[in-house]
Length: 176
Image (tube, rainbow, N blue to C red; front, side, top):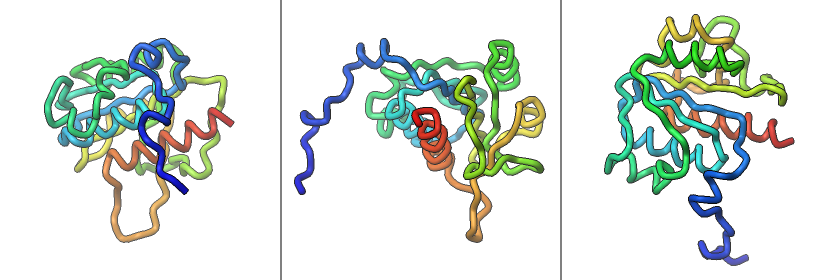
């Protein structure tokens, strides 16, 4: 077995990415404090051809050296927009017939391993602050919540890890 060189990976150019058919997923990051988490989510969004990212509240925006450190150029490929108020973004997406799901631990959440994607829908995934999660006001507006089952002693995962897990799971179902 031989490790492939970057030149052998047949990756899209920035122009190819922008014109490619996108995965019908939108990411909403609300009040994310860590610039590295923001960059990491951009990089994951690039990997799975995510349609768009909304950066809300205190979430920093590109260009920023610390975001670029983990994004590695994904801020140039993935469409993004900043909006101060996550509630406005949720309402706007719902008015566009997007199903908005908070990734949070709540009563009656869908467990990720049991959640079945409806391939006729477009989804937006709301990820919240590293300490406080998705706000109760945002949870109340969402069409539902998805929880990542966890078996250990910790109550949460890093937002970049959570995004990677949830995006991969939904991507896998959408492409099946």
